[in-house]
Image 1 (tube, rainbow, N blue to C red):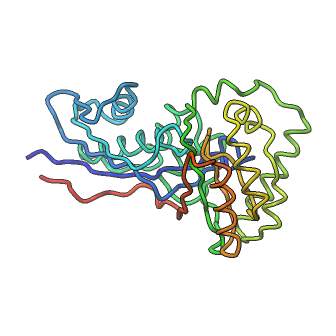
Image 2: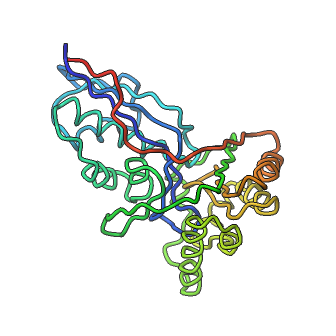
Image 3: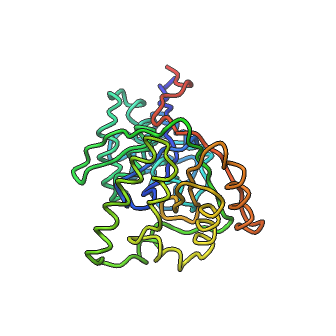
Length: 283
């Protein structure tokens, strides 16, 4: 029997507000890929965009049969495509007897995604910051913080969300974004809600995307007014991420749920662990 490579990676939230394209957080949602040596390429779970085949082809020329299973909602800004890409690469490497190289997977994932935040979080887990050159460093999340996610029924494709962004930004907005990012990272590290509240509203990407999906702005405002330390779009949206504490957990959850107007759900998630080799390989 052919050896199967079975690996899973995490869903993720990119940006976290002002950390556009360079901050990412892995979520406790996963995509699992199974790859088996085959006479010809066969994407069992379907591959209408060709993304799975492309991802596998970046790490091997050997034909594989690949099947993916996921509990990451698609079109919500939760890193479903990054998890698909990275889990496929990992499973393909295992099936073809290669050393599982996380750095190579992240670099190849960037080649497909054109930004590091989701693929790095998907592979390494936790909260990560990525340099423009692809260096990845893990950041801390204080254990007092609660992560709430509002997931509207609406969807928004990353491609559409990218097209809404301006080509240039004002110097003042860039300077304010630098300050916001520092407050965000330090607030997440210390669990200080007052620091997180100073992050405020992102100016780089969120206003343009909120115009496409006004529900995003409503949920962010509701989270902040209900006691969240910080609230931001998850990736390209329309899901919204809120950081709060145990004391404010229920009020923030209730506030975001009310803002959804019955058209969505609230999830409380822990940090995702990143790339994991799963049982199920056979020889």
